[in-house]
Length: 335
Figure 1 (cartoon, rainbow, N blue to C red):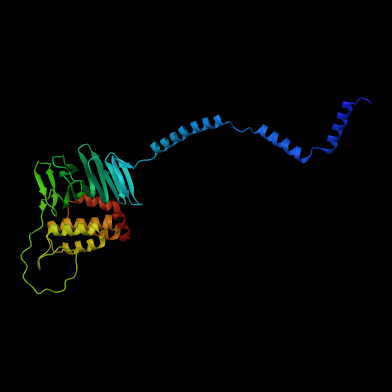
Figure 2 (cartoon, helix red, strand yellow):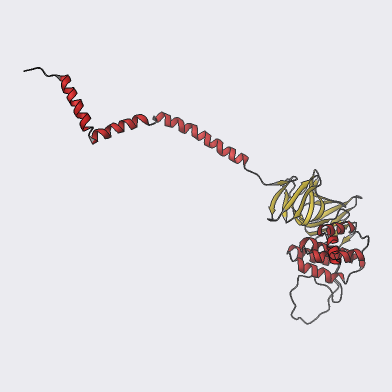
């Protein structure tokens, strides 16, 4: 038998493979091996190392997020707890000026909260919160026996509070505080100390206005009585200043500004000149800052200035007229 020529057989087999190609099964196995070689799977220990590095990185990212998250907005050292969408505020050397809208500001360290009732300027000082200008309602957390009082500073002195609710109006040349609940001490710049009871109003430089005792009422047959928020008064007697101011605070608290304006207009007609000036100023403030009725407010301020020339509220009246641009309106009316 002739010996086999293996080289010749291999050449023939090679030529046959080239002509026929790989079978589908062989081609699939070949492509699978090539893919595994091109994209090797990570080893188990490499996967564990990646997880160990990813966990601290995620924790660090969370910590950075919480540390950098914005806190409650602070205005001149006072926290802005609540605000209306139309709030417009400016900070300068004088303090925090609320030009428009309503806001609740909190001095958390001293337990003092305030809500503006119209435009105002307020400033946090080392000894307390100072109302520079405007009108605000204050609420102070109750102090424990022996604790120092909270302090609200005004142009006429210092209001010391152990826990109560009251409204302060500051006009830089004068003002008033009305106590709603609790008790406060007012220390005048002269050193005199005045204690207020709920319902009392103290003005500077005006004296304390207390509710007047009601005279005994005559017996009468009961009949239907219309509900009213006005304080009861004796028949034929004009309400006192304290009663008018208390009623005004109630209506302002309910945001019934138009009703408050009508109430003041009626009450002013029965008051003496000295008291009428204060009520006229309150009415003008309502028309200017709460009702924002420029036409009525400018007309009222013009009457106020004619009737109370060089009055105690002259500077505040001038600021209100400038806010409303009353002189420009008067010029347009005269054309």
